[in-house]
Length: 483
Ligand code: GLN
Image (cartoon, rainbow, N blue to C red; front, side, top):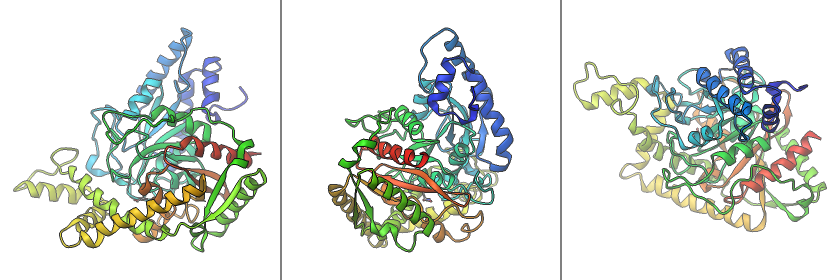
């Protein structure tokens, strides 16, 4: 085969496996070698499951030898964000409090991937409990951007994005509460999709803010993202918020290049203000011009709620974080400091004081404050009202247009250390992504070009359950870019 094994699409890898051009074991070995070469510098992985992965790959090879039909994802090496439970493997969520914690069960998404014959090669680095935009909040040290090692990969799924961009796996799972799949996808130049809330089961995902969290996919191209997403989607009786909508995810993305004349794409004027860096604005404009040439109708729309999105998110999210993180108490899970503690509260104080990082503590305190008597009305209730107007805003817009195109992030990847001391500056990188979580809508980030070495991302937002449509438009843009 002329193409090297670490540059394949999932379909090419599948074809190569069934044509016996290479074995599943060789394919996985290629990725482990790649990790050995590159991950010393990038630090995308927190743990590797090499023995189990190669054993699983040999099982797939046997099936191929016996001429059994194998799934499209069988033998495909994928990486998993470290807040998703994989039975009998370390699952730390980037926190000291879960150092050496071994998952007792598989998350539903993992059960589904295993049923497909996927090779799970390792767990990826992340901001502690998915709180951050750079992976610098990981208790195990930051991940570096494969395009420029002095830059962050984004976060919180920075390890997954860097693993895909560094060609250290064929795809990865991440989680997205306020942008944690799309923002790192944008910084690392890969595709990242956050599905509609409820499309994918959250069973076995360590909860950050349960009303916003969704598991999604990071991949090298739109087709690969669709294949992986279709494998993990679907209702699950272990997660009551998951649903089986009428339209399942189609693993084969339809080519709609010649149907663009039927589509109207909205550009929210508020997303293209001075807060957006010039090169990103220019490249998005170029993409839009190309779409117009192909016949798409473009409409400027008002997203006046954008100014409430970050304040609303940074109230609702910490309120839920403070409740969800109370389970890490030194008794039920993970690490504990019990010696010399005189009573139970001392165990809590010492364990949490010692093992939680500063961003986790900041959000737990903020959340507890927001929910406390006397402040609830001032903050939480107001945020709920703002949330209603954000939802209304999007509902109105989607009566006029089929899609929204926005930047994924206001800037390209920033330098390690640049924002870590200034939480507010860090929070601003979520400006264009958080509304999508607040409204439960699906969105995808696609690489559309570069500023120097640094990738630029474009976000497509669709109506609820219209993942197939955003994947289709994503593919059109991907094709325009590659031609
Ligand atoms: N960067 C955002 C935050 O820190 C989003 C996190 C996420 O999506 N998990 O809250």
